Every structure is written in C-alpha cells, then in structure tokens.
Image (tube, rainbow, N blue to C red; front, side, top):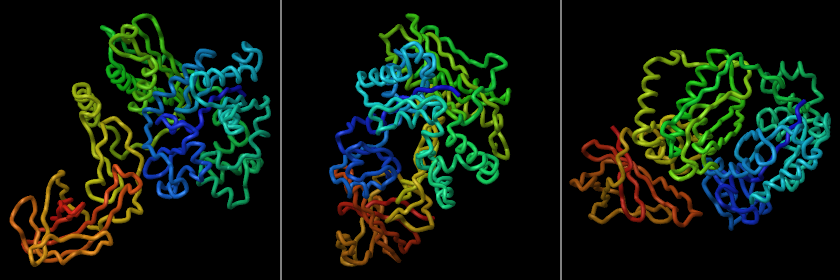
Length: 505
C-alpha cells in the first residue's frame, strides 16, 4: 500500500472568491450553497441549503457566485509551495493535492516532519490548510481533515481501516448508497467494511464494491496500473514561442484529442495526466492532474490554463512557451462507455474541427451552442455555452414559483420589445404589490403598433427574484393575452412598464 501525503485547504471555493474564514460567507451554484466559511457554518449555514434558508439563519451572509476558474488558478500557488519541498505534486481537484510520502519522509526525517514542513510552507504562502499522511488517497484526505483541518495527522502504516472505522458513510460522497446502507442498519465505515466483499459486489454493483474497498482502507483500484506498451505522450512545439496563454490552451485542446485517440486505440484510460510546459529560458512547469474518468478536451485545456496562471505567461516573462507535452502518467484498462446509436461520424468530426478554427479566430466564446436549463421565463430556459466547454450544472425542473404554465411559447424576442396594456377607459393597467390588477386589460399595443382589443387573458403570475440582493433584485408579474386578431403573447409588467417576453403560434 502506497503512503500518500494530502494537503487540504478548507472551504477552497470560498477562499477563491476572496472571502476569509472569519467572515460569514458562501458561494452558490444553482441557487444552493456550494461551500461556506467557518463563520457561516457556526451560524447554521450548510452546504446544499437554498440561499433563502442560509440567509434566514445568517442575515449577514456574504453571497458570491462560484468561480471554478478562479479556484483552479489560485490553487496553483498552493501546488507551487508544495512542489518546492517534494516533486510530483498531483492536483486531485482545486483545494486538494497529494504527493507520494515514502521517499520524501526519508529525506526530511520522518512522516511527521514532512507533514509539518509541507503544512508550514502552504501557510507561509498565505493559505490555511491541513496535511495528513496515510495508506492511500482516501484515508490521507480524511487524515488531512482531522481536527477540522487545523493540523491534520499521520495514520500509522497498516492502520487505515481502524482510522476510517468510526467515520460516517457520508464521507464516501455517495448519497444514494449511504442512504440505502443506513436503512439496512449500516451506520459507519467500519460496519460497511465488515460486510463480505462478494456480497457487497453482488448487491450494490461496481460502485458499491469500490466504496467498500475505500471503507476497508484499500486502494480504489489495483495499485499497479497497466504500463504503457508504447509512448503515448503528445507534444507540440511553438516557433516562434507562444507569448499568450490562449495560444497554449488552444494547442492543449488539440493535443488532448490526439491523446484520447491513442488511448482509445489501445483500450486504455488515463486516470492521471502529466502536463509539461517548456519556456524559452529553459524553465519547465510540470503538474500532475488526477481524474477517475476521461478528461474531456475542454477539461484538459482548462487545467492547462490553471497551470499557466502560475507561470504568469505574457509578452515579457520567460520569453514565451516553446513546447507543451501531455503524458498519461497512470493507465488502466478502459471499461468502455456507451456511445450513441449512430456513433461518431465524419460529419460531427468535421463540425468540431471547423468550430476549433472559428474559435482560434474569434476567441473561445466566438461560437456557442444552446443548452436547456431550468428557469421561470422562456428567455431563461436556454443558455449559450462555448463549443467545447462542459454544459453548466443542471438547474433542475423546480420548483420555480412564478413559472409560466405549458404550452411553451414559440418565439422569444430580444430585449426591448415594449408593450402597452390599457383598460376600457384607456388608462394603463397596473399590478399592485399584492398582485391585484387595477382593471381588466382591454387593449394591448405591441412594439409601438396599433392597439388591438384583448379577447381573453389570464394572470398574473408573480415572480420575485434575488430579493436579498438590492443591486439585482427583480419583481415582475406575467400575463397571457390573446387579441381579437388571434395573436397570443406572454407579457410582463415590471416597475410599471410592460414588455413582451414571448409569443405563441
């Protein structure tokens, strides 16, 4: 069993947006708390809470949108601090990195000395952290989190199972499995580890068997990955040297495609990727990135961008980048992935290459694709994502108070399509704070055109959004109206002004 040292920086998403541990703060994603500071937790804020529930418990809560790119860029400073003491730093995810401990411990006079040196180096770089050493990555991460991350601990060799036994099942980060085990009377990792391996695999499948290995203090997969039968690394040279990070990131995306093709031909998958960046002055920036699945081309490019942020690539530093190399550091047999019925065709590959060329000319956001998400209004149901990027996290189907009922509109115009709604006397129709309509709508004029009589209408559907943020708070009410000419509209009134959100066929 390999000895691993893990450095864990608590509440890293909060740190990345500039909120310190003493300030009650939280980062949110999909309208829920993704991470919060120690001060916020003391006030009752928890991960997964809705923003309104979190602010009810902590009225002074500082709320920030999650910035995953900032998390990756800032964590490079932590990885650099660790790399000054021991090479081969593996970034598991922003906020967590690992290094082999056995050789470094012999050099620095023992595992506890190594742990303290690494922890002090990160603290001196300006970041709170915990450092832990144990058999395997899973146990070492929990060892780093021991004592709330205020120090961490060293788990004796061969003692991982005993160390893990008291922990609750929630540390496995498999909510459905943990809930099922609790209903079966299994409460801790020790209880789970005591179950026979064959029965666990038969009852819970491969994912349950993997979690069972972790609970027993074993590696999630065999320690010796499959060796590469041939050199599968891919490399690109820059002549003249690339002076801007965007050039290198674009090349990384292309190299990742070649790397995946080579791995696929050999039936292999890469669980740890080495990225080497060479500069004109001879400096080489190396980083290891772990991923238990296949890193997409966009994900590889994103990690190269984070890595370059530590190198401060610009027109005047180190003369630019002269070469970039991607190397599969750990290989395992590819267990396969379900492809679509029609598979990957030459047409889709040509489209992908054309999109890459356009992005090279117009920038990463120069070409986008629509992605369906949740929301209240029809204009919020679709967001544009740059081609090659991963889709945003699902915002879910609800509940969305104030969302318009089916059927969905057929046309969503751009902003600025105004409307005027008046009653039988010609006075503007208004909606009070209690959603009381001043008078039944009698006429509607769209886009400055002539007024048309209203044949039927329904509403209002009120929507109060971001009431906790005075700068972005929004209050509106929606109506569906059909004119005597047979035209149907979705109208909204906001701050006394009407506009068209969508129209129906």
